[in-house]
Length: 269
Image (cartoon, rainbow, N blue to C red; front, side, top):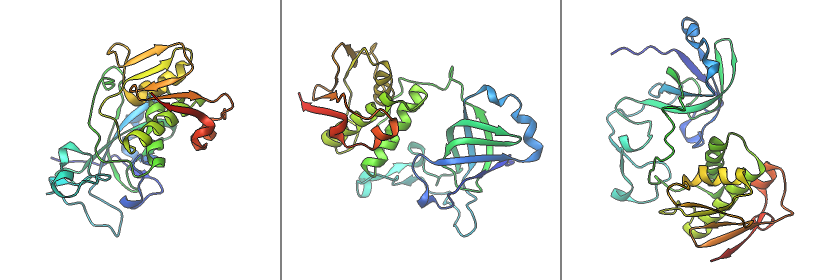
């Protein structure tokens, strides 16, 4: 088997410990011979990026390719309880250290692609670029149990925001409000973790808020775990009700940073 790097990553992160879980803005510079392969890539808003993770920048050790079990980042269970097989996680230590990340294509400049975020270090070799096909790759009904706990409330907020924006397409005020509602619920009810299951009741009159809740909880009206009503509130798991405050900020960034009590009133059910 022979692999030929087709390009290289440019970003500001050069150490794995400094890489945020959701990655950072990055560019991919294709090597000159492969530039024709970008023809009409602008047809796609998102791309799958495959990289070779076993060539870290100077001063770092290569990955262990014989490791088959690891304790993933964020897993707090000690000993055997926290161990996962490498095929059950996204650990870079694996027999063939191939990284896979989906990213939004922001701009094209010659043979350089600007992406919203990648979790690959600077100078990582790129193996391949494939289009994200909405007709094949989107599996909204997919499920998966949480691996590891969020490092902080802020880390959870970043994750929820990314999920909601990926579903809706942009960060809007109601998207930010939905993020903060789910964040507060997970903080107060489940110590930041995902609940075992979701039941969501949301106002029919705010479709963007509905998008945020659908994208984060992966519920659906057809499966009966997402219900609509005409009240100006959100109810979660028959446990808590959230009523947005009329005087809350209107800017999404301000909503994400605001204290809880300026955004909504919460009561137990």
